[in-house]
Length: 437
Image 1 (cartoon, one colour):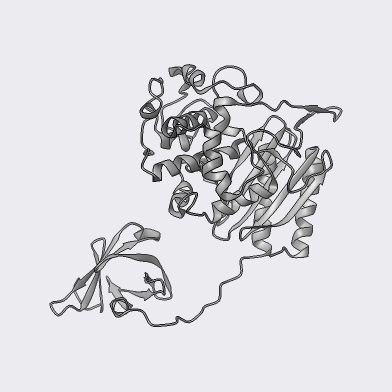
Image 2 (cartoon, rainbow, N blue to C red):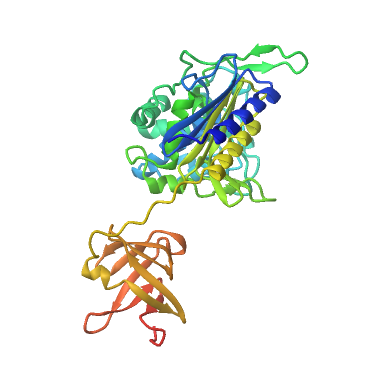
């Protein structure tokens, strides 16, 4: 798959303009469609970017840390509503839950005490935990959104305590290696872009330090490339069970807290930022470390994403993040996902499934039920069966979408064994509008 020439030209022009107005040494943004990096737009030559050049991921690292937490939850080794005390005992903020920490709903301060951790050689986990005081809570949990890097340092500590494995090795074994992210590393690995602060008055460059952030690494340590970040974006759009179950990733995209109460345009799920753009919702994260900014924006329904890096701290996260979302909207508007063609079924559904299909009525309103080749039922208003049900046993189905997600559909039968009603969470649908439920 490739972009249309006009779409690619517009993207290249926007990236070139952003690099010039943002006064950044180099910028690289990649367009991902259906799991593949289909276009790379670059600007600047200090150094000249390509898809294999490393930059710092910054807080995009948090999306991977959150994935590790959710893996442990799925394996039964923790629960999201566990208090921190259960896994890191003895801290004065131990009543906070893992869910609150993941979703920036804990009220915990943004940074640990001491020198700015992003520009300082890090401490170990014991030192980080020992430095916590009750004053690190800015406000009670769930009162509002408050972004916290410190929360993710603590989540990394929870992972180490549960698994007995250092966070970096755990990430490599459970996420990076299975997805083939060979150029996503803890430390910079050549070739990599040096990171800079651009002087505001005479445009000279000051190179920034590249630190090992120690116990705070789960919040923002990693380095990566456009190629690897495109693979991570493809995973967030369409996950592989080897790393994380699809339902779990969808759960991560469910809002924990809105971060914009005035317009409801943004929020945070379990480790993923959420952005609303018109009728679309994007997921992803921004990233920054001294000398670097990064962007990850994914439209999951169309499996389309934009990823990007710049090596100037002045090219702030909001700038590159806004540019990434602008490019994503441009691609989706200019080149909508092709509609999959309808194809006939190879055989009619099994008799017990076919019996449930057709028209049903509730409160004088007509509904229809269809069967698909996978042996599932789809229900809804005529012509729009959007409610999916999967089999759970004899005459029992579980809702998997929309307002019936998680609800039970039970088949009601008369003395002769004929299906005469569908009980969906106590609402009974009958074969004609004249029947009493």
